[in-house]
Image: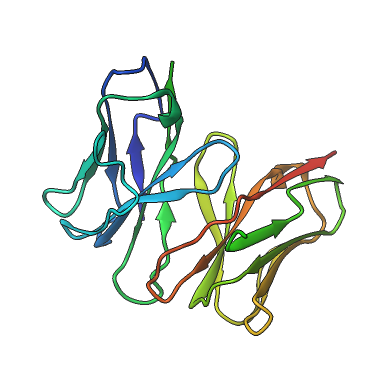
Amino acid sequence: EAGVAQSPRYKIIEKRQSVAFWCNPISGHATLYWYQQILGQGPKLLIQFQNNGVVDDSQLPKDRFSAERLKGVDSTLKIQPAKLEDSAVYLCASSLIREPYEQYFGPGTRLTVT
Amino acid sequence: KNEVEQSPQNLTAQEGEFITINCSYSVGISALHWLQQHPGGGIVSLFMLSSGKKKHGRLIATINIQEKHSSLHITASHPRDSAVYICAPRGSNYKLTFGKGTLLTVNP
């Protein structure tokens, strides 16, 4: 079974530029999560989708971050414009909507904003 | 006070040593994950448990729901075990709360 796929793996941009990340969850996983992990900290949930609907985006900085999951499968997370403090690893995870609800994580995208 | 406290924050061991990482949490949970993160970012789920004890190879995880405490043990540690280990309790809403992680370095 293929795992959660993310691209790109690394991205370096200048502040005020835009960037987009892509995630393909495990086949059949209806729930998809985007996390932000700043160096030295645990991941922080940015947004949770169930199919193509948003379940929780309470910690998403909506003035600059946006995410979509139009067909209930792949998802993109966008930052526009980027700030220095957005430098982090962006993790995508997916899970079933039934027991055991275990989350499976992708390899992450390491973003550096200069 | 953080909802999830891990100890120690950093741990250096010699190959072959027995390792214990502790996790205390203050929220009610439905389960708890132990996760492993290598340099480069990707996270691998080691265990998800809601009671008692689970064992997988050289890894053992225990949880005491009443005490709100979990431990991850590594027997016969190896340099390839070097990574960050993260405790992540799962609330009744199925959301994870993450600890800051324990950086384990196992020297040959």
